Amino acid sequence: MDPLDFLEPAELLSFFHCRKTEMSCMENPQTFLCQLRDHNLIPEDRYQKMIRMKSKNNMRKAVYEVLDWLEREKSDHIPLFWRCVFKEVIVNQYPTLKLLHTSLMDGSFHFDPQLPKRVESEESDERGSSKLLDSEEKQPRSTKKKRKVRSGSICSDSDDEQPGPSKKQTLSPKKKPKKVLFSSPKKNEMSEIWTWPLYKTQLPVTCGEVEGMLKRDKLTKGEKCILVGKEWFTPSEFERFAGKESSRNWKQSIRCGNSTLGKLIKAGHLNAAVYKKRSKPAKKSQFSTRHLNTDEEDSRDEEATLEAQASSGEATGKCGKSIRTEMSWLTPVEFVNVALNQGDASWRKDILYEGKPLSVLIEANVLAIHSLLCKCKQCKPKPEDLESQKNDDECCICKSEGKEELVVCDNCPRSFHQKCHLPHIDDTILRDDSQWMCTFCVFKAIEGCRYPDKQKTEAVLSRQISQHMLECPYLLLYLCSADEEQIFATNPGQYLENYSSIIKTPMWLDNIADKLQWKEYQTVGEFVSDVQLIFTNSATYNKNNPEYRGMGENLKQLFDREFKKAFNIQD
Image (cartoon, rainbow, N blue to C red):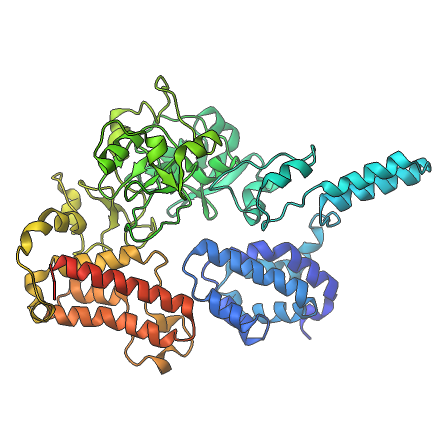
């Protein structure tokens, strides 16, 4: 007999209810989702949408939502859920499931603290209190009834609701008003381990492969706060001890679970004193081509991230060098002067966000401007900090920090992993103190003088690629950088069902990059043919999916336009 048969369905449902967040945080949940799909526990359309997701945060949110849907709509299938996910091959792949299985089998889940009664809204809670008060006093007075009705104006705190003018009229004094933030923590993040009573005074942290225990009070005082074995470290020392001394900010390299310390500090879960810095502060703005919007979660100080329309760039609500363009960081005044070529422009008026000048956001306290006499580390940085602020903290190509070191360009804000850049960055370059320029910058530097005469497409495609080992790598890097969600980066046959039966010749960006690196192409036409094959395959496979077909069409338009520009083609 299955040991689960000894447990009541109500117990299994309660256990499921308390573990949804833990299961949604499992790494690489594709196999987990396939198992649920094989047992008809999740809808087919939702499964197809989820397996296409590349963003880890979106995937976690989607897994939680499907588990929540299963609890609400298919609660009688929860015993089947536990039986299918506790198969040996599944449990061995996910440590979280192994711990949950152990907890159920040894009965330790019975020692979990009893949950309070679920409250759907403050309204029902206040009405319940009022009824209790009425029954205790046994004095049914009209004033009491009026007070109960008044509780109906309290707004429920739903993720789908947005703050508006009407909310100010109905908001109960007992609720704190919502603070407008572009990077506020999501609701389901609030149940992570840093909020658990067990970790009220300390938190488990990691940096690379090294684990330690962070003492909250010591971090607040600016003392050595991370314990590894019997030795204490400051955050920077712990980062160096973990072999990550090349990292530019301990707030980004040290993590608690899946969140960086910088994010926890910004969200108010941690308080940190100012440590003497040996490296640059985090600045997570990532340049995207001026044809696409960016979706940043961790900008410097994470106050707001804007796409400035006076020129192509990104802005944060700060005084100082806070706007990221393709080639450098600029102050708002410098940004407007460069964009409009005039020295008397008012940047508050000329830099727009969603059609409105920044002055609107400043008046609404969404953006904060420091005074000219401010001496904070952003306004008066040390020379070494100012130098280290020039480059991004994630790879321009794969959009992640990764475990490998980032190599920074000395001419623009971009950063790269050694194997993401084309050509690959050799170790000798890392040991060389001389200036290094990325392929983007090299191409831009000589773009105007390579093809003074107009070219024809047919002639360009027939040329030997050995003569164009700058233009072709540049075009591929341009595509990889524009593919924000990394939809076309990897082999789609590995995660799309029936792909091989529909597409006979699959192609993806990483495959083209390898062929370029190892010089497998003979002509420019062969390279262009492989790139176009990606878009043709996308249109064929996604003929009934306009969303993903549109992504391929947009990327194709970018490539065609940049290809003609790179070779000065005018047919």
